Every structure is written in C-alpha cells, then in structure tokens.
Length: 194
Image (cartoon, rainbow, N blue to C red; front, side, top):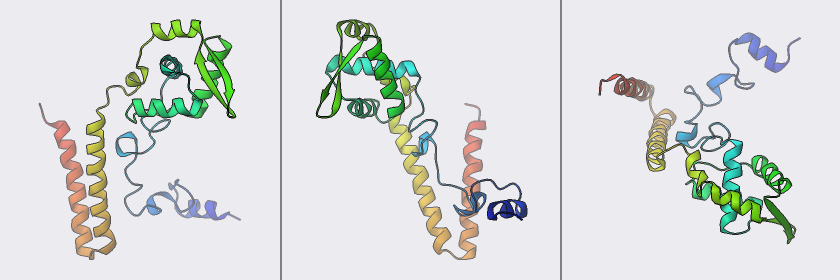
C-alpha cells in the first residue's frame, strides 16, 4: 500500500517538489522569480553567503566604532552592505564567542543582553584589517541595477499573472508566446558579438 506521496510519485514519476508534485503548486510556470537578483534567498540568505573570515573582519570593524550587541551588528552589516549581505545569528554568535576566547573582545551584560567591546589587542587587529569588509562580500554587485532587474522581472510576472488569471484561452496563449519569445531574445543578447 502506498502513502499519498508515494502514490502521487508512482502515478507521476519525475515530480519532486512536495506532495502536489512539481510546478503545479505555482501554476504551469513554476515558482516566482527567486535567487539574489530577484529578492529570493540565494545561497545562505539574501545576497549569498560570506566566508567565516568576513564575519570576523566585519565584527572587528564594527566594534572599532563603538560597543554593540550581536543583533545590532547583524543589522549594521546588512545596512552598511546595502542589503547585499545579512549574516545569520548562527554565524555571528559563534564568531563573537571565538573572538572573546581569543581575547580580542570582551562582553558585559546590559539589560539582559551582551554588549561587546574591543580589547586593546582586538583594536590593534581591527585597525590592521579592512575598515569596510562588508563591501567586499557583495563582490561588486551593483545594487541599483539589481533592484531595476528585480522590479522589471516582478512587473513582467505580475502582468503575466493578471492575463493568466483573467484572460481568455486565446489571451493566455498569446501571453505565453510573449514570455517564450522574450526568453529567446534575452539569450540572443548574450549570443551577439559585442
């Protein structure tokens, strides 16, 4: 006897996105735009994943300015990177503990939260490093262009969705042809000699 999921998989092999199978949960065209260029999570969060050294360098650079709490550091990095990188608590807090174990920072409880401060040794290491390591994590991403691309993609999908929900079968077919033609034209742009 099959479970419901096994039965669906048995009846429709090749489907693998949840019990309902593949794209059906999102309509005939799959999930909405995703990835870092379209506002999705990408690898490891918005904007991608930084290396452990980037978290370390960023914490030291932030603490050069003033003492901070852990979540405050997460917000500051996200803000200073223009949204290209927001480290997770799972990467920040172990790094804070490591820096404290190494004697580069110290902590004091303040209102139930830990306030982190550079030690003299930590200040020397922070001053030897980059003052803005969060800019390096973005990898030269043009945030303005990324936002324009995201808006264009979302606008296109919104218009397409409106046609798909309210259009006649002929209008839906025409809209699908426009999307397919647009995709081909985008690839042709890459194929053109510059």
